Length: 250
View 1 (cartoon, helix red, strand yellow):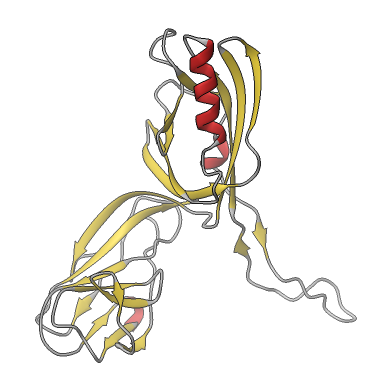
View 2 (cartoon, one colour; view 1 turned 180 degrees about the vertical axis):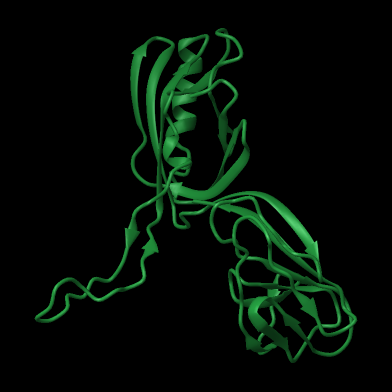
């Protein structure tokens, strides 16, 4: 693990290399979090062709991401090490989720995780111990920088996997139609007067974080592929429109 890489979840920060050797540190192994950056397995329904070679061609889907994080922890005192062990063993132990963020020379990425299995710790001496904590992310994708593109401007992203945009619509009156790539449209028949958003990830229209029922008449969402030329969207009314896109990685 390079010294300029580090990961954070909750109040715990894992260092690629400690700034000094006289503090309390969680230090990553050289490859202690490599699965955060790589791909995941593919799952699909496999149906054998009767009296023929092979199977029917079925679409594959990505499996959840499992992220083992390994390294060692060191403290100035035995009491400090005991406190560090307690912090790590209690991390997400209640079944809750938290955001795991990774920083490195190529920027920052993150994903939301839960605990996958019991955290393992092996004490080496009075002030040092090994650890292995394994996280599970229901969404196998990892995410980076958020970018915004106004109507008529091509929305692009710097990830390596199709990104799901969020449409930010300004205040106004009456319904409207948003037209995206390939003639795909989202028609809002019952539009709030205030600014709101259409989230393609959860397939709904939201006002102040509250889903608005029966607001969308025609729903044909799209994704933003990696790189150029990007995807342009327009709106039929005088309302403003912005595509909010997060760099998406696999």
